[in-house]
Picture (cartoon, rainbow, N blue to C red):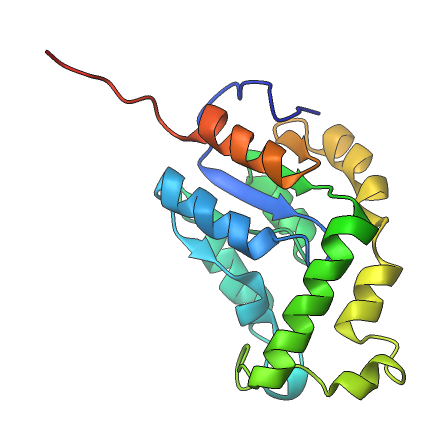
Length: 191
């Protein structure tokens, strides 16, 4: 497993970004796609249908997207993870301190989305804030319950998919350093 200061063995073409809800997967995936030049697919957008129901076409749409030579997306959903891992050459794991970084992010994002009534995917809105107390799968409760999931998944990825370079980033500072050192191409100056 690589850290933020280790060089990548090759320039990535098919990139996954992993982390718990609120870690910043989608934001980082968009940035990586801008740098690498491949398209970004927000995986939630093809998973969630109206009323938060899973779309029947999810896996077919995902297979179509990952058949391309280059892409970036988030590494989510149990049914999708093996398909994504088979094709990816880089997995970036956002492993930030949960209580200090990730939990405040997911709470702030959820409150903002709900108060602004931001439409997410296929007409869906964040649930009313009071459902935090009544819905076991409320996004904030989900983030709390699954906060250690990737710690258990990453050794499996390293063993099961040796073709994937896994980079573990533990802070926003490490993210910024890694992006500058590993992905931003060197600028050549000609005289």
